[in-house]
Image (cartoon, rainbow, N blue to C red; front, top):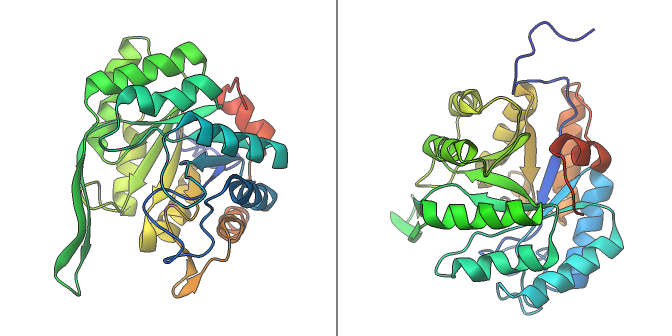
Length: 295
């Protein structure tokens, strides 16, 4: 019997989809030795994540020396290596600063992964070190509507599912004109990113409020950054949402215990899902729920 307390977008009886963000573009191996650089390393990390319970991997491409890459060839090499290693769903990043929109979109239109990230608004993006009383980095992450529309229009034409990355509540509101214009269709996929300085603070109250703002027929996940990750993962699981973990967002299994692989982070997330009485969603269940066309 289904729970009487389930509401739209808060369905805690649905299996929980786990995404693993394998590498990002900011961190390097001096900070965490397990971050993949070469295609075969992405493939090995994707396989570990898949076997641990992840249904999706989120990919920022790098060159084998670790340099961030926006070239189609590098995305193609990683995509081919991952799909040969395991049946996981692939999500390409399109987030970058100072890169033309055509360059950001080229890997998506050329390769056509199942999902591509769509950053939903501009923001200050910073990290502050209280001990040193200074910023580690501080920049503006511009995502004007013209660029968002260009990206989502290309995704629609290629039948690639947009994963709307929202760093604050206003970014959720930015999706509503796109829905009205017919550029987005349900089921919608939202990522609620919490813990970046310049975005929404990572509290359970804020997560609940953001989930309430989402339109009906939305599947949502939380992306908690750094020390805030596991608390936000626990909250999202309890609320009926999905979760993202991985070395892009957080290196640590627990305080002071660095993960040896992305798989270890996924293993912990999957255990947390089961401990709350939910099931971990399979790749096939995710494909069906999100209406995915490509791998």
